[in-house]
Image (tube, rainbow, N blue to C red):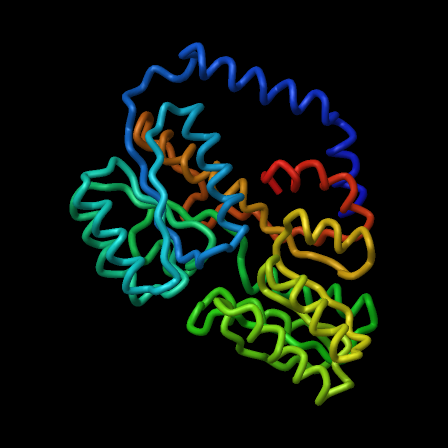
Length: 322
């Protein structure tokens, strides 16, 4: 995987990438975008405040929106009832397309059905792959969370780990449960789940520190989001633990942690792609009734990223696209 990433990056210099971005911006400024109507597409996610993962998703969506002459609207709530209300608000605005996450599918089923009955096409991203088709969505874009968890378990086996702690920061999030379940399926050692309040980082650190102090056999901690990786490193240090800290998702801080060795590996589901492809596929559907996936999810991950990959990816994390 490292070789593939390195080869890909080597084939596209940072200078060339920046020039391509500038050309795209200039083309948009000159009005050189598609000639289709200016459709409005709303994205409603389950993001909590300050979650940098969703900044990257939005960056991808906004870039595709510029290219496709889309008026892009974004809103989010980590409370499922409020997320459903935001979807209803988008329906009331008569948007031309909806992109939603299904972290807590039961809370979203009725409102997604309302959107479809109103003639609004729906694409799901990130979470809820299993429910997406049943809910009538055009397609789902993201990673298979169980497969991603299994990839973590396999990597932990390669590293000789024996006792892993899987840290779930949002209770009731079906994707998080699937990740940790996937780790248990492929990992040859013991896996414990630790539920924490992801909206309160001091509490997250305190809970992790207490667990690591009470159980010295834990030699790997797996966090389910990039913002929690740095907190886990602090908890490890305060607890005097020798556990390796690994994480789902990638950002600038995670890339730095991989480079300096404070993190072992990361699982990248490429959130920029999730935002970009969702908007682009919505435009394709509105314009040409195109759809991808053939009834199956369009996978954007998982990709295991290690210290060998971190330096090559740093420039992209700094600009907010990885």
